[in-house]
Image: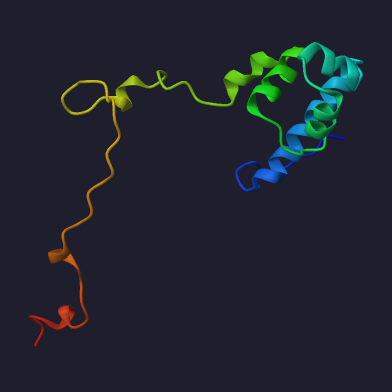
Length: 122
């Protein structure tokens, strides 16, 4: 059974464990041994075992293992394509945004203080 979690609420170690479990299931579904995946991905058998247990590996190793399992095409679904909604990235001048700027906070003059609500009501 696959390790199912809510990725939006999970801690990074929980996500690593879920991804490792999922990779193990994919490997078994392809009838591959850990040694075969290690050889095809160019990493050690120990690294494959660590990955499947959710014990942190490098991004490079993760990508190599995905390629060895034939599922690297699924990487596109991890991050949204920033060019999908170009209208949302356009500023008022009609130019594509190159940088993000933090929002401006309201001025301190607009800060409410105790007693302000009584002004003008007496």
